[in-house]
Image (tube, rainbow, N blue to C red; front, top):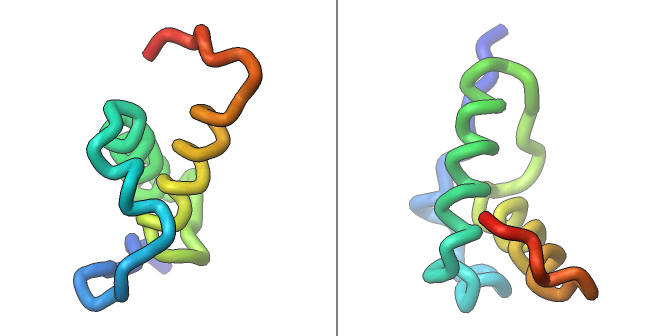
Length: 68
């Protein structure tokens, strides 16, 4: 059974829209896409929710000095 990314074209707006322009968004989205494509990860939520949550977590971390 081949893993597929959940299509999100029809997904309504999400609570993480304000992070979509952040550089972490593109990087995390690519990483998650690659893991799904390699069948190392299965998404159970729409990609914007996964990527958005991770962006929020990284940006609210007390150690914001991480270089990306």
